[in-house]
Image (cartoon, rainbow, N blue to C red):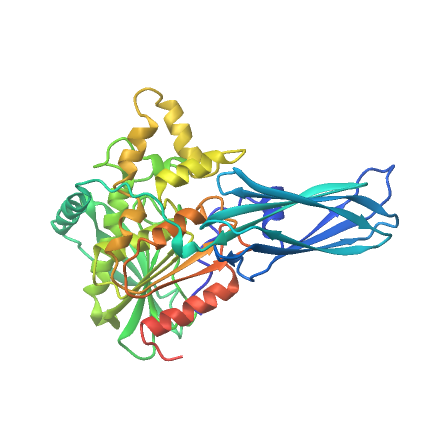
Length: 449
């Protein structure tokens, strides 16, 4: 099976994340002097995907179950906030739970303008006090974010591609017989990229048949790539960009400094080389039809940082046939920076950038940082994509704010685009999404089921 989860890039599993990502939450009483029991609260959106229309209300059904052997009285309070934590609306209702009792409460929020909203459901009872948090989206196709594209954006990237074109790739392809099996041949690939940096990747090609459509997999943040050794539906090329996995000969920053490497210079920022590495990887695919690759059917795929790379490659190179990505990191950096700093504790990756700015206080400002990122922001590439696009969004994602993802998506001008959401997931997608993605890829590349 080709498509494993592409995300799971940062698993900072704390209590808050557990609370956010579970559909039903149990709360236990811990005070030895109080009655013993648990409270189970389930919050279900009126629409399964938690997407609502601006012409209607936001509806949730809360089911509360108590295992206490005493009655509890209290109140259910609900708040609606913007995704940057500004209160929009609130309400409350009385709650009475008998011994081992239960109750159902319907919450209906007045209609809201297009956007991403936080819903907090606080249950305050005689022996219990806690909050469940959810996220709802109103008319995502109408979410508009501001563009910050530099006037020389196109010429900046045309120059980078021109410089890449002057570097001889010096491709080396070596079969890894230990990892090859009866279903696929595994090849280790080496090549030269921008600034003559050597990068590597894994190519897997099915042993049966020929002329295989290609999935071009792009890496998440500091996630080493591995060959696809299960029996696939496609040929798969997974690239390690500079500083990642096997490609750390010359560029090898520490993980916590990767995305701030040379950030003060737009022409030397690490992602300039990374973006060109991804173009060079596509060059490799296109020049190796002799390995059984169908170079007229190539789809780029990635999650998180890999999503950004997929957007960039599809925008800069029209040889891409289809583009699918989830949880796009760095989309709309201006807005993402604002949202990230609005949390009670600044979220990653914004906290990494903030830490760097503190160190460089006075010489490198937030405005200068954003001016550099305007050349790298995936939303500035979106309108240049002409192939079909599929995007996945986890509505509880703190690293990649959904508002930014939808804002970028709405800048796509391609004739065919669609998105799917996972309402109960943070920086990951659910199984249903990846099954849909596989079928979407087969359809986009016209692969028989």
